[in-house]
Length: 267
View 1 (cartoon, rainbow, N blue to C red):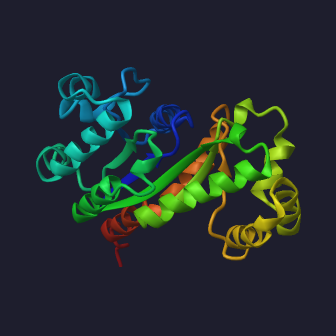
View 2 (cartoon, rainbow, N blue to C red):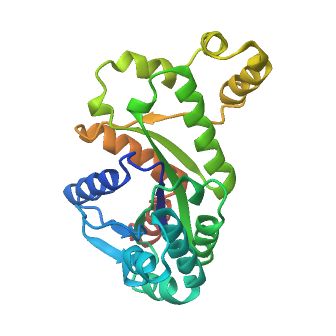
């Protein structure tokens, strides 16, 4: 069984930086992890690229040959990937062992993980190849400065959760850039009555019922929660990775295998 993280989130949320830091952390602790580039527009990498979608299709080539803009060209590239799951992706995955750990660095176009089925079909292909997959949704912590942005971030994350139907970890990235961490902490453990009061103050009266329903969705059903990530701290990276490993059951088979091969004590 293989293991995989699907790293998603809005453009500029720190996905590639997260992948690079994760790879460096695993290298430091002696753990093997392979990072895959799924962004056909990417140019520079701070991590060794194990697989690269640009070997299949390049955004620059698509824009030049088809006369598409950046967004349309990227969607075309991802649909081309979808059409080649059984060929290109399967061939690339065959280069890895059953218990390898892959991290997929995805593009930041929100439609790819909110309503376009490309990544959903990509995930289903990985599952057919016997991979346990977890979605890792990154949101810039500096985005979480007030109640309306917090609710917006929650709804975007929830949309990805519903679309992909995967175990899901939401991460607040760039915590090292936050000047007043107390403002962020208020949203990590929110008090629903306070959130509702603040939201009603910011919105027109006719939205009061909608505000109440949104707060109940976030609070009562515990649908969305965030884990802060400060890349300056190894303990923060280690904690986030541990949460993801639990989601995909990483290491559980290894424990069983070790116990299975332990020699019995001689009588």
